[in-house]
Image 1 (spheres, rainbow over the protein chains, first blue to last red):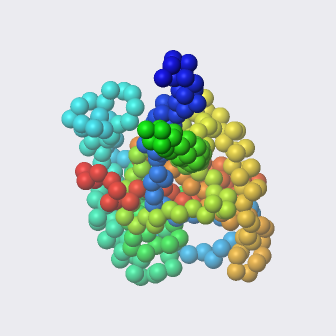
Image 2: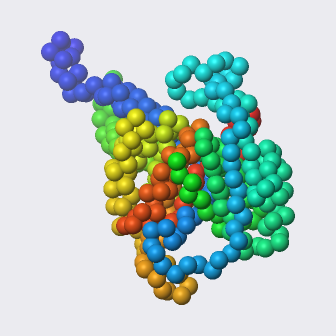
Length: 165
Length: 167
């Protein structure tokens, strides 16, 4: 075969392989970076309906008011290794955080006790609404277990009290 | 010898084009998909809730998603709407009132069909577990304002089995 002929056949072939390599690499890259939507859970709650609209008031019913207070804020620690101190940047975790939950005059620091108490209250009146009143320095992670407990025992109507700072 | 050569050539030319087409289509598909799913949800550490119901949003339903980071920063569709370092809720309020206008409406007293029409769709709040609750309350406060009046809330939580065993 002559050199000319050789060149001619090569051109005719048109090198596909590198392009396919690159395309496959791209495909693998996008497959790997594709983050499947993690199925998340949700808790339903309601806001007082008559805040913005002044209208007829709903049937008054005594609400179960759960107050959440922070007793000890806890220490900010490294989320991966809680024995390490928090570096001051990025995510953190509270260690030794103490909260107090109270319904009326009764208070507890144990979420299990609160759940039991809520269960007893719910069984007396299944239509009773509950309100959550998180006080200063509470975090979202402090409030969600309380709503979770209330929903778990059966409360369906959960609202928030506006003690805005 | 000649027959062999011809055979090798035709095989090379035949297969490639449709395969490359498909691969390109796949790439385009994944590019679009990744953009859509990552738009709403920020990377957060959600608190764990046992009573949480799985969240399967209806794509046709207008349901705004507000992400709140542990610093208190509020992010909607990867855009910062509120920063505690520059506390101005106007942007957030404008966003919520826009969303409220797009929502389905129902009467204040749903069964009786009386009262003013108020938005009937929920708002999803996704806050980090260490996010101070006062920022969630700020969003709630905005929801109650005239012109917004969103009263249904959904609080995002992680399901226990998906969390690490430490909790």
